[in-house]
Length: 305
Image (cartoon, rainbow, N blue to C red; front, side):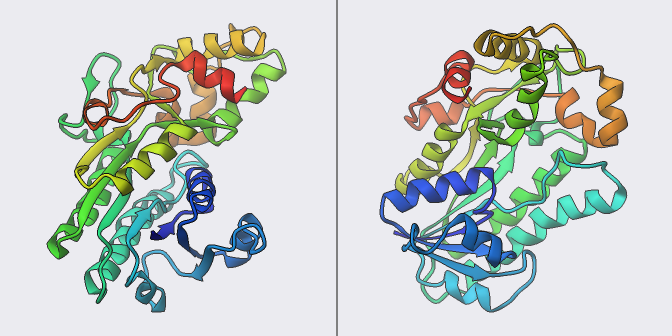
């Protein structure tokens, strides 16, 4: 297939490109930093990758390249858990997803030869936070900032259906792999200072990087997949269990908690990403026939660590 990808140099995107390239698909990488993308995907190693300069959320010549593609995977979005949530940063987080998706859909709608499918990222932040409730794809949205971001993000993606294009929205959980969120948690354990963040009671709905890439590829190839799917493993855990399992796998203590006020001092409102959580189950994902390579946390962490 010929597949256009935004957010391709990110944690999930780079793993996706590597897998699709091995399967000999032709890939168009849309990036605002072409020099960096060329380092990540050097032409000698990735001859089937074409790098295209674009500005997320802004119309331009890049949109013409969408025509003739079989599929579009839209993963672009400003990092959420990096830095304090000032009013300006919150607007950037929202616009990078809302306006970015709007322009991708605009390109698909205007394309003379339209892609057959749009795979659009979203997040389990859609459901809001809770220590007691559980959520699946049929659950209502929350009311906090991240829930509102996800609602706007998904609303823009749904407009692609007006062009007769199949839409798959994947609500990402915390993606575990060498890098990403887990990479930031490993260092304290290596220094024998690991432990749960905050109360330890908050839910941690996760997925292994290999599984989320496989799920995206299934969505590309399976015409019956349509609508929302939770990109999470079938066994969410509480933060205390995550810390305990990390300690066991790394043969390190896991009793030294990171107090919530320390995270709040560092991240401000953004602390909600790690201090609160939601228990999310991938009901529709399992019904689609998806088979997890790493359905349990110990197996996932052993492979990574």
